[in-house]
Amino acid sequence: MATQLFWDRMAPKYARKPVDDPDAYEEKLALVASMLKPSDRVLEIGCGTGTTALRLAPKVTQYTATDGSRGMIGIANAKLGPGAPANVTFHQADAADQIAGAPFDAVCAFSLLHLVEDVPGVVANVYSQLRPGGLFLSKTVCTKAAAWPIRALIPALTTLRIAPRVTPLSEADLLRFIEDAGFTVERAMHLGKKRMSPIIVARKPA
Ligand SMILES: C[S@@+](CC[C@H](N)C(=O)[O-])C[C@H]1O[C@@H](n2cnc3c(N)ncnc32)[C@H](O)[C@@H]1O
Image 1: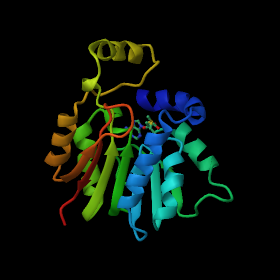
Image 2: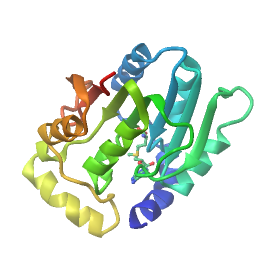
Image 3: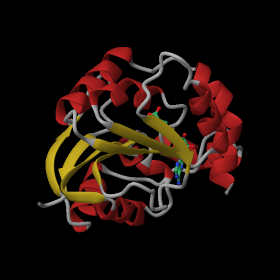
């Protein structure tokens, strides 16, 4: 609940904030789009204000995007006017919830997993909502890779409600959680200037 309130408060500012590293963002979109098929039904969890959903939806048959924050989903829904892809829907839901429409062909989670308290639980929930052979595409901030002053600062910023609560993760932690859930990791890579947010492509065995 505290997390949801944090993101509700942040939503208008988040919507105005330019993308950190536009080249890396475009590269990520191109990579994800190259892995999706036109026939795919996709679930995105932690979709924020829907920017990525609106870019990826034209590549697939159906795109269901969810976020725990009512504020984020309100802004996302306001973007669904004329000219928006007709195959995208936004819903308020926690990453631990089961979403109507499962099983999906692909589940995306961008800049989300480090924000949930039970990372293995959310990864297992993703697994359960994918069809056999389905893809899990994630990008996650791994703060264990940060310099110690930054790591030391995060809890203080969270207490001051300047930053959200963060689960400290390393890339190895994340890979283990994903593999322990039953996925086969196909790719793990870094895009852009920052080396702290691996993109992991994992597949549920067919
Ligand atoms: C850093 S933003 C990323 C938004 C978007 N995926 C992007 O890449 O721009 C993190 C988002 O995760 C959402 N979030 C945090 N914890 C969540 C949870 N447990 N369940 C669902 N959404 C959550 C927040 O509301 C916020 O919109």
